Amino acid sequence: MTIREKILLDLAEIGNSRLLYQVFEFVHLIRKNIKPGEGNIKEVLTFAGSLPDEDAMQIQKDISEEFGKIEGEW
Image (cartoon, rainbow, N blue to C red; front, side):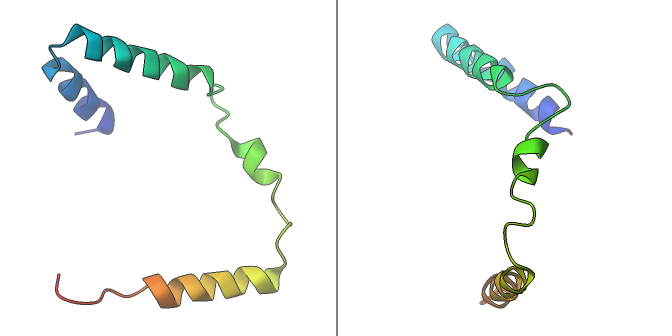
């Protein structure tokens, strides 16, 4: 099941018209801030090259060391 289908199922269960209207307003707010097919690629790319390779490698190493293993039982 896709996320879209899950959202639609959740919306179908909401009987309160005020809540549905709030969801409607939220969706329209999101749509106003998204340019079709563009996303935020341009904004993200403005940071390209702003971090030295050495720093980026250290950050990757730190993340891997701190969050790359699972402790305890799963």
